[in-house]
Length: 136
Image (cartoon, rainbow, N blue to C red):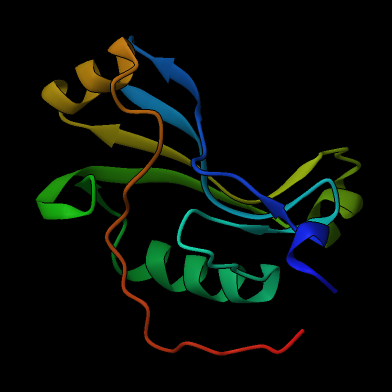
């Protein structure tokens, strides 16, 4: 396979800001788009099974929201739903995109940045513990 056979995109956009509850919703992790592996701006791909394992550990032990991957905690991830192809199929959900859907509750200053459109993606407090190189 060539890299042109994979979907790439520079950023994942926030789907909804709920001002009343102070929540921001969208994909924190994208695994596939239109059935093709998704590669982020660093050319990283997170397979659905790896996302599911990491999301389980994240929600159980951390749930930390950060400000653009920097500094201390600025909020919490209060909702998470791992939307894999298998989960979508089992629930009768038709989707072009799979990955980890979240609802994040940032502090007021960060919420304003989402409301204004300055922030369009998520930064959650996690760390990569293992890389795996895959040959094509």
